[in-house]
Image (cartoon, rainbow, N blue to C red; front, side):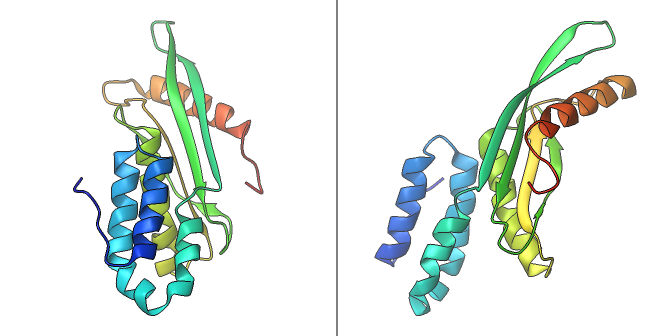
Length: 164
């Protein structure tokens, strides 16, 4: 990711504060940078919206949890699970799940951040959310995938409910 430089000192300050808060999350920083680059002309004309973007760039909730499950050989496996929820100003959170061995908190934050914009542009009255795990479903049996998904949702249900 190239070093971000913005014409507006207020937009630069916003990006620098996000970068200082999340320096180890390159995918998330890239998503914020790209949105700020696109929106900079709007912020120059309407600087009162910069604080709105500042709030949008910080998740309302981030959850990381372990997902214990048992494979077909009876061996206990452990994966990491994540759920990130951004900006419920328009309504409850909407966003899918990603299961892939490369999933990290940074990737889930990037996907959740972009989900806010996707939902608002499609006029869905919903905030952005995303969840996932570093679980790799490739090469797993249907029963293993089912057991993992059940374990994931059981663990996630400890942290979210009908209002979260």
